[in-house]
Image 1 (cartoon, helix red, strand yellow):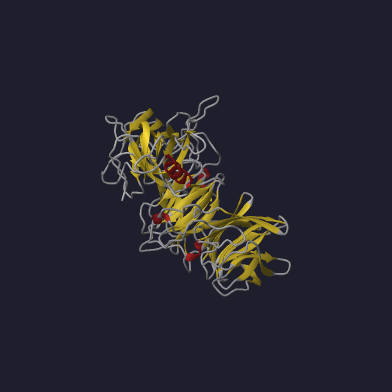
Image 2 (cartoon, one colour):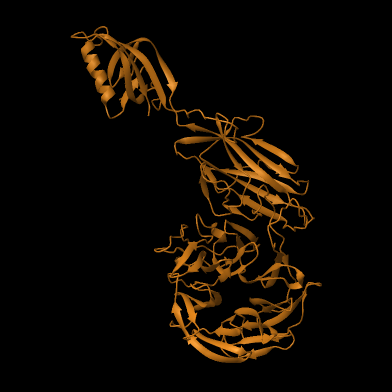
Amino acid sequence: MPERVVEQGEISLNAVRYPIVGPVQMTLASVYPDKTVAGDVSKDSQPIASVVAWNDWGGGIGVERMTERDPVDRAWWSTCTLRFKNHLLLPPLTVITAASGVAGSFKIGAIGELNTEIYAAFGTSIRKYNNVNDTWGSSLATLPEVATQSLSFRLGAVNYLAFATGGGYTYTSDGITWVDDTKDTKFLVFWDQRLWGIDSTGQLWRATAIGTETDDSTLPLPSNSVTNLFSARNAAGNIIIYAMTTSGLYAHDSVNAKFEITAPDLPTHPDNGLGAVRWRDSTYLSAGLGIYAVINGTNSAVVTVVGPDKDYGLPTDQQGKIINMVGGHTDLLALIDSTSSPGVGDLFDGAAMGSHMAAVILTPTGFSEILGWNERGWETKWLAATGTESATTMLVSNAYNTYRLWWGHNQRVNYMAVPTGIVNPDQVTTFEFATSGEHITPWLTMDAKDVDGLALYLAVELQRATSTETVVVEYALNYSTTYETALGTISSNGLTTYYFPNSTTPTGTAFRSIRFRLTLARGSTTTTSPDVISMTFVYRKKLKPRWAASCTLDLSGEWKGNSPRQLQNALITAVESNALVEFTFHDDTTSGNPRNYYVDVRLSGHEATGRDYTGQVAISAVEP
């Protein structure tokens, strides 16, 4: 039962009563040390409040939770443009081209380019795009099966476009006359001035002249193991043919006409290499949502895990599998089909190369997307408006003298302009933006879990804001799945400050974790976007209250049946106790026992010598 003290001039320490001289002095022990500032002040130099300032979002998406000490250049999820420091902008504009005219339900198997014009395989119907009128012409050819891939190449001084279909490939040199070749072909690649193809059994063939194929080597694997065929550098720095398979990467030895397993040593995965591409100095290989970046070297390969499944991965309804990757000037682009769940192999064991850190969660169908990787972070380039239709294929092309990314989704071909270099959005006014974008920060938590946060205010700085170019600001607390009432809609330039809980009573809002969501929108002008320059969150950290009491014990005589020597011995026992001891000086029966403290004891004082144990001792009783 807790101790109670009724008599004035007395305390209880470790269930022993002591008389005191004067009052008990109480101080708050749980306070942060003062900040030390030397030279110029920084954003966090104010003595009480702390600051998180977002003005660089280039680290990309994929961090769901952060502490105040973590880098602040990451987002949990965003469809906004993140590449420019001091600029958070709407995503790029997506153009959905006209319907193809093909009836029924079908899949866009591949998109290709010939002589600076775009062709697409809508089901088994090949059609050409009219860039001026936004129309797809009549059917140019009928494929034997749905296309599995397209390839543009130059063989014998003639430009060709070919569509592989599994049972063969169909090609043209002028877009008018199309030839069906019945040589089984699932994937095509052009290498060493020859056309190469591979079928579902793993049989590789080569052709010096179009339509005349010679069998080469065969993969030493069961049928339907091959997932991609592409060219990349080997350990000697030479470009060779690689076959990606469900069991790993195989290099083609053209001299001895055989395939050999090669680095990296990958676990078996049903979606290994659906996205496989050579970009910049690396070869990128996908498996589910995971991506390996491979740089070959003599007798070794440097392998880095870079996929969007790292850190915290992607939100549940954006998870899926990478089905295609292409390289642009500023980004490696990954097409993710979220209409089917990722496989359990997404979490690589990483025994030799480190692991993907996101847990694998089998999810329902979600929203397909295109993500871009610039070797620093992932950015969302496009997010499907519906979660019921799969994304199928992707192509980067300079057709019609405009550098664009083309892709198939929901039986339509889409495109967007993609940059050819890093540019300053303050100096370029021709960017075209989507109508809306969403940006969600990570959950911000304190480093220590016994620290309470108090939100004080949020300051958002904008430019190019108008009555139609706006930003809605919201926040959520304590891992809630819903957002609180919006702080407001910003439609003017400059700094807008929101106080918590409101400007009338800015007493602060307590939180254990907090995150913010910005929703950007524009009006009818496609080249105008609200531009978030910075977002500054100011909050106060408060430790869980811990109290310290100090007083002077009067050991000049007997007290409550204890002699000065007995009181001294009891005091030493309390000081030397490893366990906390109880301290109180009130008769307080309030629920929760607020005035009984469990403390460490320190002392200093004066006492007589010899057999005289009288004296006065100053003690401090501190809650740890």
